[in-house]
Length: 234
Image (tube, rainbow, N blue to C red; front, side, top):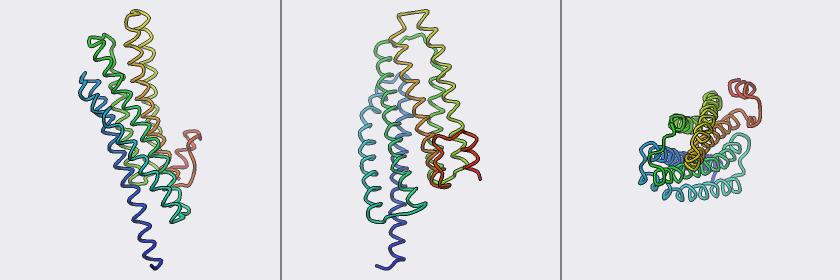
């Protein structure tokens, strides 16, 4: 087998890994969407659907991680190719955790529907932040597919909006529960849902940061935001 053939096969292996990651990302995105619909529409069947499908995400994570390990062992990639494989391995961990958070949303929503179908807490922030999290996850995956560092930096910036919605809801929730102790149990379930959504945003942000790492070769996970933007766009 000549070098050109080896290089071509290596490219195919990398493309296969990327395709599998995007497939997993699409499944996680669907899970978040269905979980939020289950909550918004008070639909237990949708919640159960999310819970039942969660194992398929775990299976994909193991499959892709194994493929990453095998590719590194066989091909010994370097430079950007190595960064791509490492980023895929880390990104699928974040996707799996985002899938776990979608399951939490579904389980907590199901309990609220079953135990407090007529709860009086205004959960507009949860619904809004849920839509924002779905959009952020979709955009982070698009950035990964296109290896677009500049757009990835915008995803990182926009994650702040979900954090703000979460903090606003927590403040409102504390007021509700203080005024009506009977709502504490339901309030805690809603808090868990809001926190799960906030974490989905965090995982999407992490995936976007991996894109910058692949393209620019810089680890921007713990740098100030202005420095991250500068690195992504230079």
